[in-house]
Image (cartoon, rainbow over all chains, first blue to last red; front, side, top):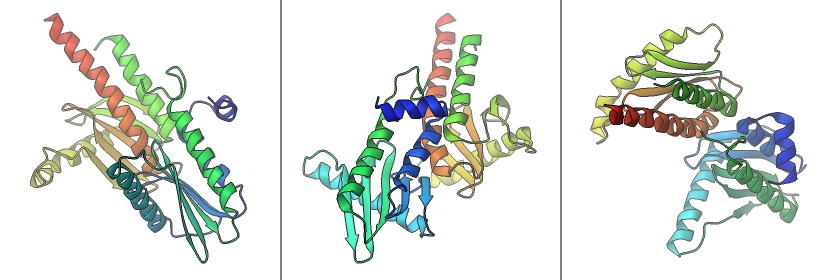
Amino acid sequence: MTPRLKLAMEQDGPSRGRHVREIVQQLLKLHTVRAALLVAPDGFVIAAELREPVPLEPLAAMAARLGRELAASAARVGRASFSTAMVSADDGAVFVGAAPIGYVVVLADQQADLEPTRRAVEQAVALIEAAWTAPSDGPGSAG
Amino acid sequence: MHDADVARVQDALERFVGDAGCAATLLIDRRGEPLAVAGTAGGVDLAAVASLAAGAFSSTAPLARLFGQTEFSLLIHGDVTDGVHVSAVDEGTILLAIFDERTTVGMVRVFAREATSAIGAILAGTRNGRRGAT
């Protein structure tokens, strides 16, 4: 368990949902991030933090489809599933990270430093993974 | 059910409410009788919700059969931020989750999957134990 996750659990009680929302909130600390989401593989939004209004459902649907397609493509060529992906355009970039319960999605503006943003997505994925593999007597327990 | 199994089911429901951030959850039988409850949904008649949700769930079975399934395993009534999430636990029980703007239907789905699996295992163990005892 990472120190950051352990600290979050001690401070915030055993709700993994709350913890996941906080992980998504952390991504907005990067000032070039306009929106951060956790999206289920079928496109349902699990958690979303927006700095400004963005079309949430289309973004979630696009990210879920992209994530599924990347995972399927990796399997077809016999590779492990992707960890992060980036799609850029003139006005910004979308990052997608594969987490155990879905995809971490970050919408960044065109001034975003790509590498720090990618690392932040990876860190969010790692924290969600840690929350889902917590010891059986901790918040990760399913019964 | 043994008291220990009842307590385990209750623990699973409490954990589900805490993790998913839903207002309340009910384990009901297929007739709509509440078997266990966790959380509160102020002003909502949970017994009525249970009865109506069970009816709605069973009424979709003919539609499911048109798609080659015996029933749908999941129904969602409401919208993204308010509603009732209904999922089958096993052939005899259904898990209801009443949620509002404090969470999302996506979050409820993630943890409902876990809760139905955990509760289903407890109920299966109880049934197997009963069968073994007779």
